[in-house]
Image (cartoon, rainbow, N blue to C red; front, side, top):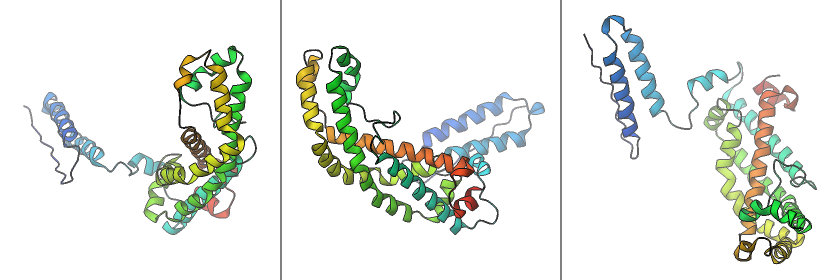
Length: 277
């Protein structure tokens, strides 16, 4: 004997993934039809079907049940303390990251965040060095990275503003998320604003460090080896600004992991209370 079970869910929200829901329901029905009633534990199957539908309709920014269980809020920590702890974690991590990057060789001396030449020039670096243009390439790289090191400290006010605007609901979702969920939240909230803020500072720094002149010297001398460079005119300010911010968030993510995983990185009593240790 076969049992046909219909699981349906209607969401009155424009743009909801109904096609995907119908597909999931169809898979559940097919599975049920293929299992003889005498051998099936219908209660478990129905429960599993409901779980699948709930997973399909859960908001994208909500932590999964597994994540929530893996990162429970510590006993005795209030919602307000949790929010304060995450704000402090972000502030501490951002302060460390910005301080590191704003030092001489903060970008240039770290292969993880070093700003490389843009586009096709980046792909042609090894060729250019083989043709004897190593000094020109290095001068151009130096000028870009120095510009970023000089300008990145300007990100601090936006960092502070984003940290202060975090709600208790944001904090609970972030705490129960992945190892870099605070950084991901912060990046989504601030990247565009930081890019608008930093670009003029980057352009000023590029002028001081001679980035445009270094680019011109490189392309003027290197077009014999890579003719396509003659007509290649990238937006250098955009490249340096975007690369500088990507480096900032990469280091901030690492700081967040450290605070979550390493008790020695929890430098304040509040961080120790919220994250343990």
